[in-house]
Length: 353
Image 1 (cartoon, rainbow, N blue to C red):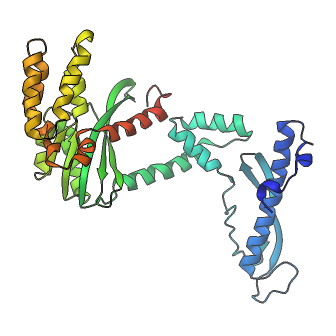
Image 2 (image 1 turned 30 degrees about the vertical axis):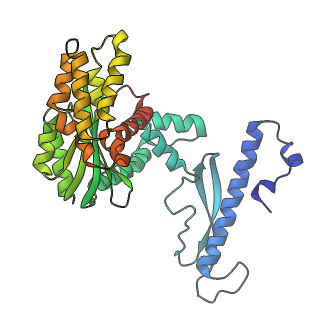
Image 3 (image 1 turned 60 degrees about the vertical axis):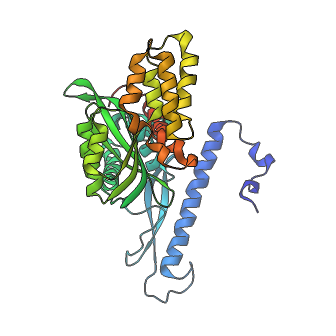
């Protein structure tokens, strides 16, 4: 029988409100938990109820336990054994939350809610109290996992590493200040992408990126074939200091945005169309010719844009050393910007941290 066929339509029609249905489901969960615990004890003792024990250990009645779940708070009977060796997996000793309540707390914590906010939310939604100390215990486990993740060993070689920063408002010494989360994502040799780490610092700078790259090296990274970054002053030199053999690529999308920053509206369409001929050229030589044509048409009005292309030419065109099929993923940091967008989505309701 399929699970969805356990209750027919006529049975379900008896419930006239969501409260009645929740009450039934609460009782169903209570009964289910108790039966599952009985089954666990059968397995532990290696014999079912009313049979004779061959191990010397036996059933020893029940204890009452208060459990909390998404259906609220309830008391269940937990079977005991004589020598006290039974430790149920479904509702472990010294634990009274079931049905993913811990996951709910973790989710609320990840949304940026404080411990007191989480306590209030659990009370309002589920009708029982969870102390801030319990919430802290759960979230402390997350903090420990984060530290372990941040310090984990990395692959010796990455084909591409995209790097970017995202700014958040952080409360520090009773003031709200801007802090940058530095993010690095690597493409491994097996084709899988991996977030290498998240580092919190002040406003984005090449000096802090030096510490990020040094940390990556200390965790086992020996070589990076290509790095894709924005045009932060000094960033390329910083990368070369730590990974001198890396090919450094400045993000062309960032370059386009910067070049268009002061272009008047009536020129923008033609300006961007001409600029596209540079990075869409089939070869580096063709790109150089396209840049000259671009400069000839626009230098009088937007000399700053042409100067920026020329000053950063080698790092803007490094992708031409590689096959056409992979050039776009090299010359953009779209992947990491998409990740930044997801981080923004989860943190947008938090004004500061």
